[in-house]
Length: 126
Image 1 (cartoon, rainbow, N blue to C red):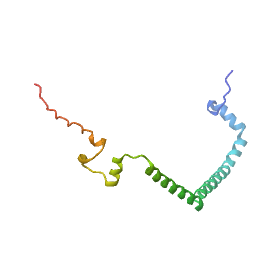
Image 2 (cartoon, rainbow, N blue to C red):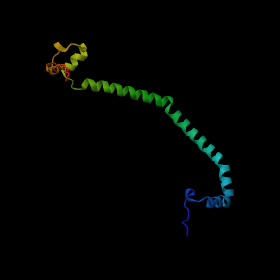
Image 3 (cartoon, rainbow, N blue to C red):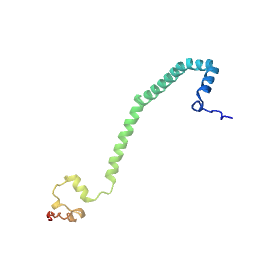
Image 4 (cartoon, rainbow, N blue to C red):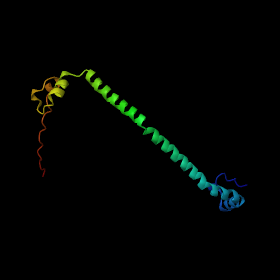
């Protein structure tokens, strides 16, 4: 006894033809209804998208977002002022960064620079 096909992919051609012939009226009815159902879903999706867009772009919502953004920026500025910053960094911010750090102060200036790399001579072996 042959295994009963559970999906369309598992059906052989004859079984599929018999299924379509047996259910032809229902298949035709579903195919006729499909465009109107699709249009209803598309229209509903457009309405939802329009509602979300209008809500997000409303004047009141935008004012709140701008105020919140400004409050956040002001809060970050105050946080930066309150942070414990080393005196070296404060002086660099106040006076500008010097390109030549020979006269820099602090622990960073006391570090030795990396040693210069020696050039390697090429030797020909014969």
